Image (cartoon, rainbow, N blue to C red; front, side, top):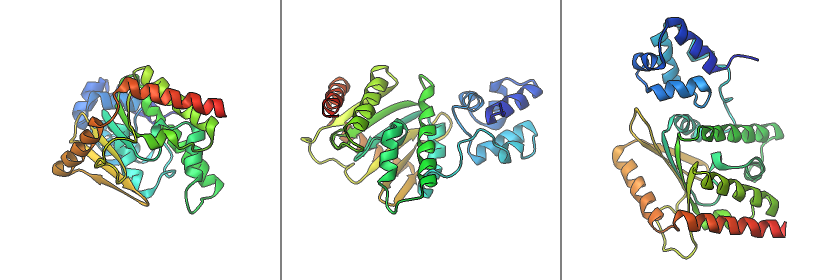
Length: 266
């Protein structure tokens, strides 16, 4: 089996006789980040890879030779940097306005969302996008990190994207993640007052060793915000919308009931 990026990093670290904490200190990152990279749960940004090379004295091996990394492509250009941050985040809070956030999607649901894009890409490109989206779901392999909150507009669970069977599976997946304690989920019901997140989807991310950021996306555009004032403003909008949402248990019950209805009609 080919060595993964994590395998190469672990071998280089152990060749120095260093613990993960010692490498983390020398590369100016957290020990948990080093552990996550070695286990394959996270992938370093280019800057982090350079810092690892500098710390280990491996030239540019870890920067340029990155086997096992998620393949480039498969996401929109404007989301590429956000995906790198997503791999490093300790806390992620998502808002889905019209569809389930990417790394919570099942394969069938992701295929439906990607196939609905316009202009329609080639079959190979669409397949790559689906594979990339499923790779992003590996964030949830760790039972604790990142901490994930998903705030979903009721539209997300009511529109039967891909048909009843696809939606039943997708909603069942969300219920399973929530009931296992892996994620928190809240639904914003149709009857709530207008809220400041109606303009599009939002992701808030916090890190162990860098300031928080926000990512906002609309049609054909996405933007990372790292200004403390802007991040605080978007977080305030998220918190205001969350205050209008159903508590977690009623949200799970609503999603479960909708999944049951889809199964009965499927």
